[in-house]
Image (tube, rainbow, N blue to C red; front, side, top):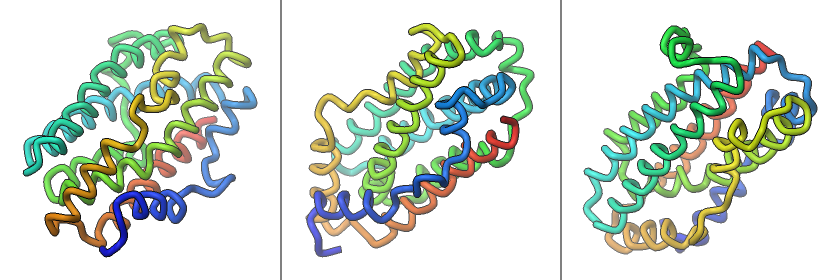
Length: 218
């Protein structure tokens, strides 16, 4: 990799951005056409994902040679913990209590994403994983913004019921700057590889698989 971290992130976002019609569930929710069954499944699948991703980010933090990179992934893990409280509110609004969340049978297409992130936590170079994960944040945030709007407009969800999606739709206070600094430090130390784009491509593909698996229920 010879480009700067900022250039790499811009290129990754451009190259990996999903097409307008690739995500089949989010437009259905935004238009009020998704079933309540799909919303409940969304809550239950996300419950498993958030818990898994929390652990994955902590493992990544422990593998970072750079303290700033470790703090970055620890911060992502802390965010997952905050999101879990909001997710429970969404689950209740979708008609699921704690027992229903425990009894839910997950769908393979929905759990491919956290499984891959767990693989990256064990095997990926943290510099590359940082670039791949952050490149995906914009798409995820846009999906969450559209879902929150649809839940309020068409399904009668209140602020508590939408708080999970509001949380991820909000831009990070410091933007991309912490991640760019971490990636640049890794590149300067010779830790960045072309695998970052492979990681990012698969992350985006597995995320679309998540949404489109749920779209089959809609």
